[in-house]
Amino acid sequence: MQAMIETLLNGLMLGALYALFGLGLSLSLGVMRMINIAHGDLIVVGAYFTSVAMELTGLGALTSLVIVLPLMFALGWLAQITLFNRVVDRGPLPPLLLTFGLSIVLQNVLREIFTADTRSLHAGDLARRGFEVGGVSIGVLPLVSAIAAIVLLGATHWLIGHTQLGRQARAVSDDPSTARLVGVDDRRFFAIVTGFIFATIGVAAVLYAIRTPFSPSAGPERLLYSFETVVLGGLGNIWGTLLGGLIIGVAQLFGAKLSSGLGPFFGHLVFLVALLARPQGLFGRGA
Amino acid sequence: MLRTERLSAGYGMFQALFDVSFHVAPGEVVALIGANGAGKSTLLRAIVGSVPAARDSVTLDGTPVGGCSEIERLHMGIALVPEGRRLFPSLTVEENLLLAAGNGRPGPWTVARLFRELPALDGLRRRPATALSGGQQQLVALCRALASNPHYVLCDEVSLGLSPVAVDAVYGLLAKVRNEGVAMVLVEQNVRRALGASHRYYCLQKGRIVLEGASREADYGRVATAYFGV
Ligand SMILES: Nc1ncnc2c1ncn2[C@@H]1O[C@H](COP(=O)(O)OP(=O)(O)O)[C@@H](O)[C@H]1O
Ligand SMILES: [Mg+2]
Image (tube, rainbow over all chains, first blue to last red; front, side):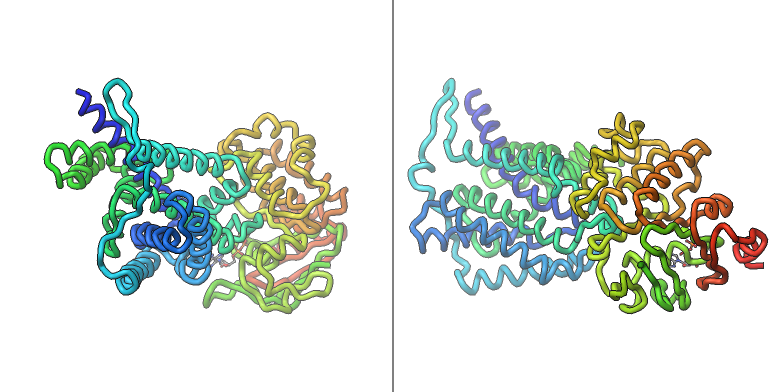
């Protein structure tokens, strides 16, 4: 019983992280109507940035976020201005093709610079610490990651609901041409949104790389988890994304308990079954 | 003075406007009359920059603005109330106005004042904008344009499909706007109402101006002829 509860808790904490993976995907789909195929590779890029920043500065994994976050924001801003803005209003296919190409380029550049070897981020002492509640042991690091992920999701939800930035996001999502009439400069605004998305990718990258090793080819797998999370929850709903992430995380860990190595497969299975039952996603508006 | 000078505009290969020369003076109300498809909406879109036009073909106080973006023109004080209202369904009534106010110019038309002028909307401020009745939505659309504090408001078919009571409410607000010295262009199906509310008028037919003059001296017969293109 204790073991089951432990698996459930770990699954939930992992799932919150997947929801953070999904957040960026959900935002770019919701605000800009584009899917970024390189999303998973950017999570890997974020991990390598952190790895290098830690080597150069001697900072810890979490504290190096003070360097990685602004860097990721700037990268996102730049990617939007130079690349994504060229394809953003041309229908679904051009963004897919462009970011698919970007994904391949990123993987090759990473392999060229860092070789194909697997790396991991060391969180030092924190990674080993944990505590027990009623015989169930909980790791400090997974808990901190989950809380950080949920706080970030909540903050984004608040930002969208209560600020001028959020109003602009919803207006552009509703009707981009009318948004321009009320002064929303969509191209410039998209650059800010993508900067924000890349920053959330940076946080997710660090939190995930502390617990899971990464290599230049790890991106597509992360993209898949992000995608499943967003679709499962129902497009355009942040709390749906959180629920989707939690479900995938729990399914993966229970699957891994049945047979180690089958974890991701069980995640995919649950995703498929849930989608057959509710094609619009759990929180999605009626199909 | 907001002016178009031999303006030609269209959509891709299709030309909708031919050499249109049109102007509105500060504080003036101008009616734009014409049958469906005459190019009235296209003219308003070209003036605010939604439809591309040659740089010199649109001028504001003598400065060419035809090459400026919609955002730049909004900041110069030109705002459009688009045909069909086009409120944002994901935003509440209040948020629709706050969005425009935050992106626009400072000035007398604050969101607080707009709600004071229209108590009927005040109670609905937290409703999704598109959940309102047509007349209320039209008022919100007008307020959204006003919230950016324009010198020139271009109103595209603001009374289309509304009940007589709702039309009166819309024209009541327009009268307040005019009394504050804001210039307006009114695109209106109801010729009598358009002429009654304006200083001057233009008749547009198949993308060309075929008749213009002072509204008070307008000959309804000639306007009708121009309108129907017979
Ligand atoms: N988005 C568009 N794409 C292509 N043609 C258009 C578009 N909008 C309007 N038109 C055409 O331009 C002409 C003028 O239309 P419009 O300016 O909407 O007329 P009005 O507002 O006077 O009814 C019409 O022939 C119409 O079919
Ligand atoms: Mg029209």
